[in-house]
Image (cartoon, rainbow, N blue to C red; front, side, top):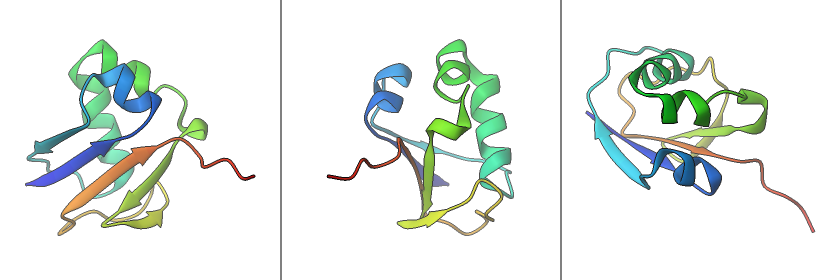
Length: 82
């Protein structure tokens, strides 16, 4: 089991700030594919991965990063500087 966290517009599209899921995914991308297949709202939230960033156990990661053994995966839009 792992926690999947959604921030900003990702949370708005999915309608949840966080959920606990049981996944067989090995990488972040496999997790995204599983989530996309759930419902239209997930497919919409993950339709443009270039507009998303991901962190695995609070470390900024790539979509090909391994997630086996991870406690948390978070999805969020890129941070804007200022």
